[in-house]
Image (cartoon, rainbow over all chains, first blue to last red; front, side, top):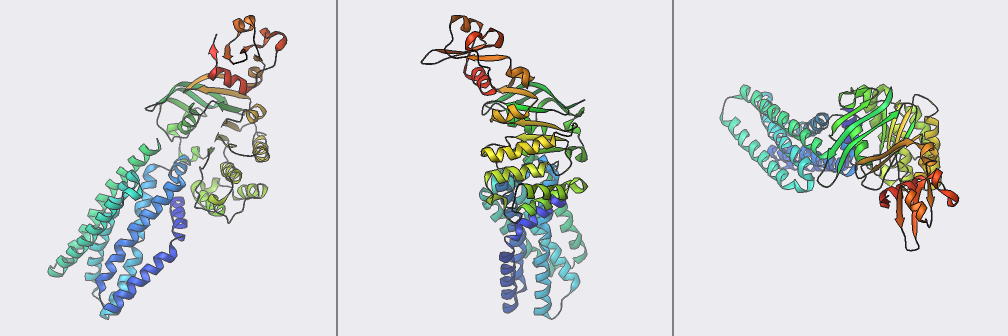
Length: 201
Length: 275
């Protein structure tokens, strides 16, 4: 799987300037407007655009077939894509922590982590939905579904954060979202690997 | 033990089928796979590599390919025809990725030796290389992880004679080791006539011939403007505007004899009428 990660890193190298620029813009807007929630857009945008970019480059390169011929399994291909996109959530998470710390002069760690967990789960569930759809229909045709997934993720985050503010359930809310993501991710990986196998055979 | 055994392989698509494909590739030999476009050569190679489902059995060194471990699969190198390489990566990045795939089996020095030999620019994207350079890069990758069996799908397609000669040279070197084996599909029958020990001829998803190359090239003769006797003795005939050409057993060819090359054999078996 490390070879697949490296290939995707090389793919993202082309877009590095774009991602850095977009992050800087979102951070700047969040900072200057004092609106910490604005950074949530970045948290959704980056992982899903990374997923789309890596899958579409692989299709153009006919890379998946080459990797499978080298002995890499379809499950590894699918799992790597999900994990790689999920890891890119770290960038907006760090940016969000920085913006919150600066804007609020410090923050409640437990509340922040709960909010982060909720946000991460919404984004990662969106990745889990987009992954099999992008492989099945191609990233161009899957844009509508990906767009709906982005909108649903944003609504999910906003609704979840509102719920957190009005409730006192930080501990369970730290566990439930990752558990939900784990279930949807497992399903997405199995479904995607089956799609990959069908497409190459 | 044979390097590869293909036993009754069947694969059905809507408009094409591989049917009862069976042949062996002996260790230490080069087997050429010939056939017209759409004969099933690429489908068969993909089946051997596990890229396509099939009915039947394919054994690599006596073990079913479906049960090979990841380490055992590293012993097979491959070239998957035209455009099989990731165009967005540079040659150097491609090597780095393959090093992760193959681990200790990846021989960086061997790859570097081939990039020098073929003058492959390491910092250039594979998509920007010429067709010949890409073919050489694919072959370099196939030869740089200690493979003892090579599966080559049209490795010299679209290349000029000089580039093809470079690749054939590399394959000759590879075959100096008697434990190495090559299965190569190609339309360029001249290359196969130089390189191969055995020829497998596929047509419409079936194996028509699986023969020793030297025997095959001495088996038939082409008679241009065949007479009645030639037509009677012929294995296949092609009717032309000027007359009839015949593919006859060499011992019955008579005075107009010219041994049939692989091109002729292919042509007669595909386009000719059976006698």
